Length: 84
Image 1: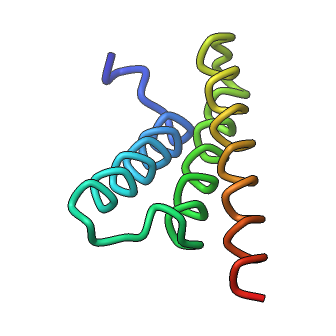
Image 2: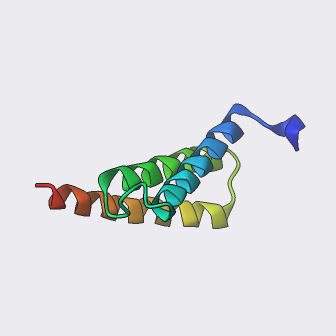
Image 3: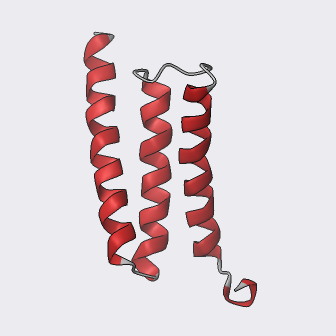
């Protein structure tokens, strides 16, 4: 496994860690689940994972990350409207 680990795999791991860290921060009540930072972290994590998946496709993972990105986009739009 580690012999095949590439920079793009690292990008995907960073994306996963961003999403998990955001979720942990919400669970610990350190971040507002309706706030802009939470949704940005989720969107950025999903984008990094999608970049990784572009080079090593996995259809199931691609679907979940596209949905995750869409949900984060919805959350970002709501957070922006809330602060206008």
